[in-house]
Length: 296
Image (cartoon, rainbow, N blue to C red; front, side):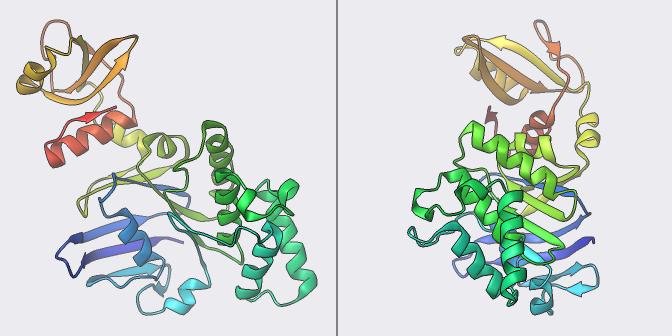
């Protein structure tokens, strides 16, 4: 089921233009929405989740009009917001059972089977009797996904789901998302490039309410192949390099500063070509879109 967004705009009462005529097609599978804090990601996710009204534009989920048919859309939608809370003394199993009732699973036997299956799928069965307040960040996120999966979900929206997770929990959570993406359309909204690079077959970059780039990761990386160069520089040399060239990112490697430069041909002596990755694409797009250099 394809999600089609056309001319979507949103301006808040304080004058902030969160979305500026966004048009985007989201195909089935894992779709990554990359952008930094304040880029418009959460506004777009809340509108798609029928929690907020746009000022202009249309959204179609298959044959459904997302803006006009909110109740029907909610029957096919799972949403994990950037932050959510639940009573710290409620057991995980009881919480999931409660949301299952709200989703319309009123038959006790059927509901119990669904709750058990979701606990096992999200790797929460061993802690299903644990109280929410004692769950780790990764457990809470997996519980949020289990709630989002209740019912026959055609579209799953995940807003910054790996923020705050430690490396081990992040890996487990990404593996879970990979499994979910095989059965549903999933939008992963994040500022973490690696999450998109590891999971998503399609992506879009959002910045200041606009979409400067969209496509398959392999294609967008291929488009900048031969245009990314690197050189080791001292801290004192970096300001002059930024004046002369389009420095898209810098990072420390073995105590040295490595600068990545976007250029159609070699920027000069000391530079070597780099096989680009999605980070280079992201930084190049953000640099050209905002005139800012990013530190990796």
